[in-house]
Image (cartoon, rainbow over all chains, first blue to last red; front, side, top):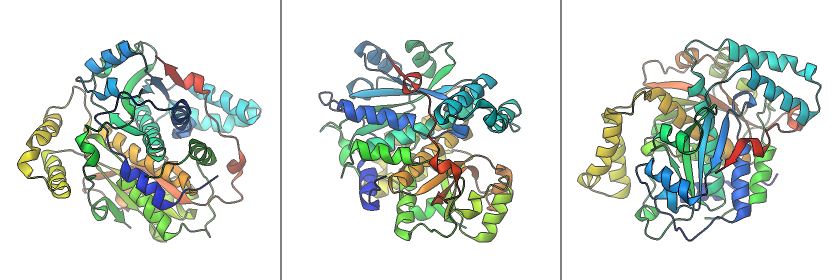
Length: 216
Length: 216
């Protein structure tokens, strides 16, 4: 691997901001977008379950519909790219077996050698801790992928905006997700900031590190 | 900013894995750890609310107690550093005002000029969408910070392990969080992989991109 210097990493994270206005004429190059897709795919998740799908929406007609279901926010149609992060709505033994099959194939490990690993995940899925909410759990995993996407975008000089402000049931309907076992959870738009975005020059607002980080 | 090449970014993300065994003798240099802390602080959150605290636990005694509350997993004591990501358990108007005060101070904007922004967030906090669960919401935000932390670690060549497998109420008690308004949600250990970690050489398991990414 090729580590990057802490100073560059931080410079890039400070450069990013939740871009409200994108320049519609500037498109993310194909290779850069492909890397952003791979960054999502590479995101870690609990047990490696990957309880998600990432819906990349590029057709203008769908973008316009999504914008209407997102209080008309201009990013939805103006950004170069848009991805809707979807959680799995249920987690079952079939999902565990799908994962174990994949581990077996990718690592060339005989299925029986993975019985212990399978049993551990199956035990969790069948007897989750008290109060466990499967959809809240898969939604949290999706946010790791969102973090990976936003981090990767910043490191490659791509602007992005994470967005929770949309009507999720409408999104599911527009994207044909109803009944698919996946549900829209959060989205991100990506592209390049427009000169008209006043927030581009605004100072980043964070609480003091001393308030946010406790040492024990 | 100093963008990094897509190839380097991906090489680093492919290099990372959920490290189970760390080399206890290898410590993360101070400047590198400081950058990881700043990466967490810089993570975005809904409305910029930052409904979190990051508890960095370095005392051996606390680490040992946490390990007992985490099914004895060796990372908890063997890793160079450990951070517990905590969500805010409630979100109130006082939190909104704390944020608006901070925006006003950082951007030198008079408080009244932020009335519209305040009203938007206050409206959400006071009249959230149907079925809205404040703790599930703040927990999701925390996972963005987890994603930022894990991404930053990978880009700087630091090994890390995200961990949900612990008894959260015990963690709250051990860390003195009970009654603080914050609750342990997920943790990460960080340091350098040990030669004994068999998983270091294992192929990364991800579903095919064609299964995970839908195009519309």
